[in-house]
Length: 432
Ligand code: DLL
Image (cartoon, rainbow, N blue to C red; front, side, top):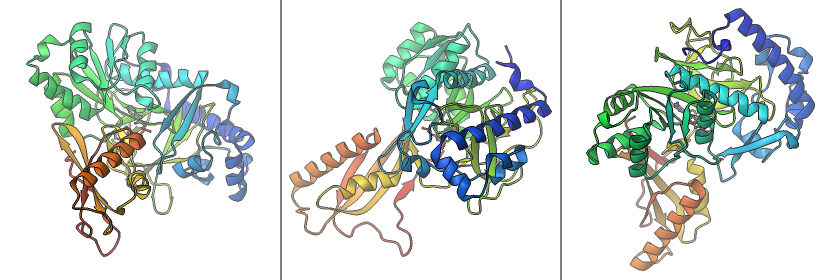
């Protein structure tokens, strides 16, 4: 099986017509059913009748993460609540999550998109798909699970963590396709070596890795370490989850599921739409979603769209693997972290100042976050028990807010460097 479905290879002209049709219908629907969209469009002086072709897309206002937060939790839902069958969520900037929903049909479309990614990586119904993305509110686990079941593979929902158990399952169950974050894949490679298990004892042939930025170097290490082919998969909860774009056998850019999402690249400063090949911020419009069809959603991911066709035969446009972000979001062990979330925790803690420095390192292929925080001058910073207790409580508060652990270190007042301009809060030493 080379492609999962016909839409992947439909002629470009037919695809553009399909996109236009779906866009026009979606804009009408959100105008009728989503109060914030009606307000935004009224304020911009645009009515659904102004959207007659793909060229008109650029007339529509953008949607941002903040808009979703302002309408938390369900303000942008476009269907009746009784038709929503699944809810997921992703990190917010200061505590509040971004809530996303799916109808039964949306879940089917999503499964189609992750099925496309699996098939493009060479998977079929004879495969054992080992899913080590987190299951839960994060879209990774259940998202890829849907695609694996759709291609009728033997789906193994292992979820994250307990690496020794992961490796045993991989060996005993005969996993052939591994799905997890690229950094966790590298961590597993190390664990395999430490356990003295050779890749000959495994049945793995490929993997689809995403949810965080990775490089060609990391690809080479994973491919060598496991003796497999490593493919990229991209997505974000607001737009759907994993499967918005995926790599094919050419491993030259990620194909965007163009029949479900229209991608644009904009200048992040001016909002102007850029030409294919020009680098800027990725923006997606969902044209085939019932529960949460976001219009011109600003991803903050930096990428560019490819010109020209791919040798694999797919008509879907390609995007370059994201090469950074236009905001300060960090992805640590696959979890999205905004420095402002950490700041919020610190502001709620006594005896410390909001002077902090986050240092992120990759140690043995695992991300490690160190947070140094200045104590206030009135704190008894010579009292060892006081300091230890404070560090413990901040660590617990951060873990409960972010869902990941951090090393917390309190430092004496005025020890962290203060810059002249914008405070430097983050040092990312990961050499991805
Ligand atoms: O990370 C969805 C996902 C799960 C994608 C599993 C792939 C595999 P969020 O938690 O909402 O959703 O985070 C979305 O993660 O805006 C990017 O910054 C980053 N990201 C996702 N995939 C990639 C990738 C999931 N392949 C945010 N390369 C996005 C680089 C990625 N960054």
